[in-house]
Length: 361
Image (tube, helix red, strand yellow):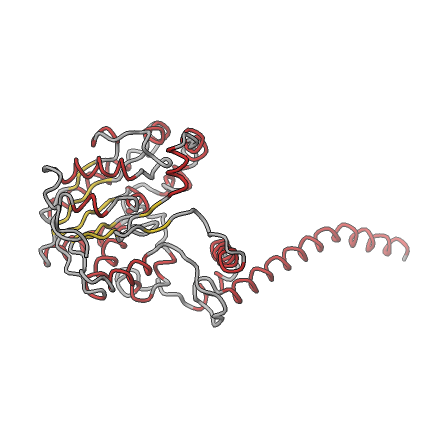
């Protein structure tokens, strides 16, 4: 009996730390659930005590363009890599008012869904599109941006992703998701403490992203681009490019591209498209990697689809292709407005000022 008691005591002693660890994990998960239910940053649950998270600007820009006295006839589409492109710079080359309608993390489905949302729901009379195409836009490993799917007016245009609605199981899983917890904390910081959430970025009059703090650091010589590049380029291939899963462009995303181009053809919309650039330091890391030749296959396939619909796709993936400046980057993939202006000159051609005098209303 004594031996059995000792064995039980030993078992309990060994299990004690595990039980404590499980208890702590349970408390953390419980706190996350309560936080997400009460703050409800993505608007998925019943609580409405706080304003929703400021996520990727799709809904914000959609509401803004609907209220413009003179709707834009030129729109800029693409991911965050195109967000610093100034509408006023585009208006120097293309006639009529322009608005930057880009959002974070755009994939090929964003081109199609975003355009239909703007044309059919917002009623924009779009004549021209400046489109920044990322290699990552066709990656089979990259998920549809959840924030876009939580925007109902947008979600109905995800025609090749019928299961992309926010069903019960997804809402349940998101109760403990890092993404939603982070957004909930951002909401609390912004609304209770008065602090900005995330990067200090505001929208300019043409929808372009403004980063005054970073620009001030650059102007004062305090911005350390080398340090940012060193911390980001090494992990990019797997964390952002999903290279181990990127063996060919995703067929569903190629279908969205075809739908987008057909939609533009039907409406006689001119498309001025280009592949967005990587910083040269990022290319130095990517080019020797096994499997990186998938980018060449993507470029050829995507360019062929543009051509088959009567459009061209410029390859600006390297900065020298448009006389870009490696020093005019915020990081490995995001350029300053000055570099965007150089890209526009190469893309749209013609003497600057061709569209001047037909600006936003």
